[in-house]
Image 1 (cartoon, rainbow, N blue to C red):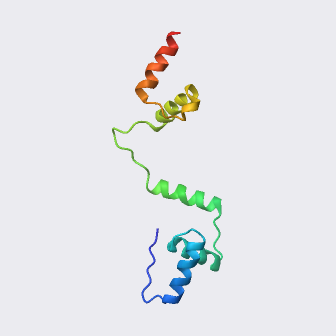
Image 2 (image 1 turned 180 degrees about the vertical axis):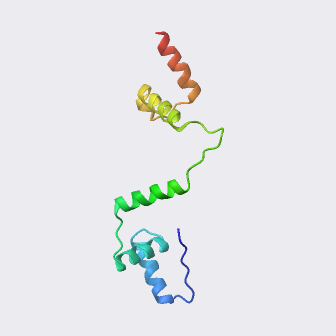
Image 3 (image 1 turned 120 degrees about the horizontal axis):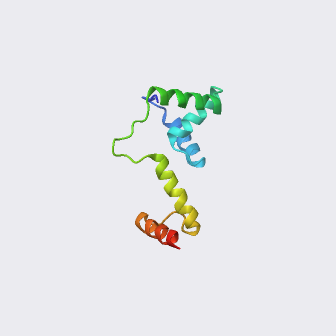
Length: 107
C-alpha cells in the first residue's frame, strides 16, 4: 500500500480533520482516506476488492513454515471440539479433548 506524507500541513485543517476523525471513531489516517474517497468518487466495489486481493495472493503466495500444522486439520479439530462441547466455546485443552474423545468412544 502506498504511503502519503504531508509537509507544511495547515494547522487549522489538521485540527478539523482530527476532530472529524474523533467524532467518527477513526484514526486521522482512516478519516483522510474516507474523505479523499468521497471527494474522488472512489467506491469500495466488493468485486474489485476481491479481484485485487486474488491478484495480490497470486503475486505473493502465502508460504507456511515446514513445521506449521495443516490449517484444514486445525479447523477440523476445532469443529469437533465445538461439536462435543458446545457450551465451552472451544476453550477445551487439546489433551483433555483427546482423553474425553477416547472415553466417549469406549462407551
